[in-house]
Amino acid sequence: MSKYIIHGGKRLEGELHIDASKNAVLPIIAATILSGNTTYLYNCPRIVDVETMVDILKQLGCKIKWDNKTLIIDTSTIQSYDISEQLVRKMRSSIILLGAIIGKFGKAKISYPGGCPLGARPIDLHLSAFKKMGITVTEEHGFIICESSHLRGAKINLDFPSVGATENIMLAATLAAGDTIIYNTAREPEIVDLQNYLNACGAKISGAGTETIYIQGVKRLHSVSYKVIPDRIIAGTYLVAAAITRGTVTLKDVYPSHLRAITSKLEEAGCTIVEDVNQITLISPKELKGVNITTEPYPGYPTDMQSQMMALLCTCNEMSIIKENLFEARFKAAYELIRMGANISVEGRIAIIKPTAFLMGTTVYAEDLRGGAALVLAGLAARGTTVVEDIEHIKRGYQDIALDLRSIGASIQERE
Ligand code: UD1
Image (cartoon, rainbow, N blue to C red):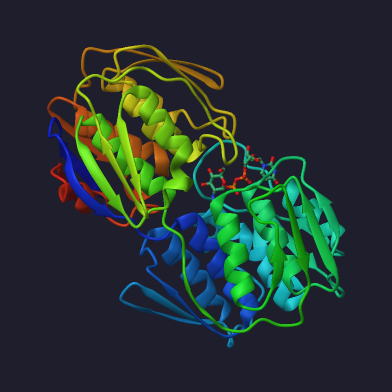
């Protein structure tokens, strides 16, 4: 198991380029199955979750190769609808393969998905939508088997604007007979990117980014080259890295509008944010104020940036309150931050963060992807040396966080 060794207290300053979004590229890779052709995805991040998705597609019979940062996927040779249990367990997002594989074969088999241990992560919304589209869903011995001899469009109202369910329905509906309307959809930028990719391939989808998505089923898709949107969560993490060290950073290749919920909280804490086309600069003062945060579906404050912001709030000079509405188990990093001297109390979905004199370096354990990133950020601000163990979680979403942070002045090394 690898670890990060961080010598804290260095003020970060410099420029970083942001890669393509993990949460956008994963459903797009799944969507390539529908095209049955060769797709070129530019500027793709070589993170563990992408490698896992690539392995799953290869195991289904697709031919895939990397050309620098371009992922070339030929799905014309796909033969199987049965997704390996071992690979699915590595990544919860593999559930979005269901919609694409059913769309392609009229049949799919998958085990219940894995991924971050974020408490109960049900998939009832995905499955009930599939049933409305004429898909028979059977669950046996930990496997989900979906079958449909006549996949058809339907009107689907989501009880909650689930990102994964919205994507899965879009994928299943693209080649279905007739029209699909999804009400109360997730509005995340990654949903808009999936729509844009599918439409570039010949799909007829509109409304992504609003509460209602319309999909007119088409007979087939064609191949395209596509550039996926930048990762707003990596961008947010690096803005917080600058703020927690009271430094300044300019991020290139970002869409500032995707980050508003994050940048407005950083401004409320006292940071200066300067936006330009595809660029954001953060300048931090020496003292930061506390802020209150409630995680919500987009355009609200993202749960994927909750832990990183918690690390920052530990270094502010006023009390802050975080309410986590999406995933009940997303406060795991709080207990590691407490071991670093943070003054945090957690009660159910609420965390209260009080000022602390300073964070102290110690050995901490990454228990999930974003919580792990938060511990790295805390280490940048802490006195002495912080060792972050179990960094495999972090590598699911950050290609090389140590290299990026070193390039703007951090002292962080990866060790076996
Ligand atoms: C996606 C993101 C993840 C992010 C999350 C919320 C990807 C690969 N992952 O995950 O990084 O944290 O959105 O922004 O894009 N729910 C149900 N039933 C369902 C589906 C979801 O009750 O069938 C609940 C979940 O338990 C959770 C909430 O809905 O409380 C949000 O989940 P969802 O939006 O589906 O998140 P994911 O797609 O899993």
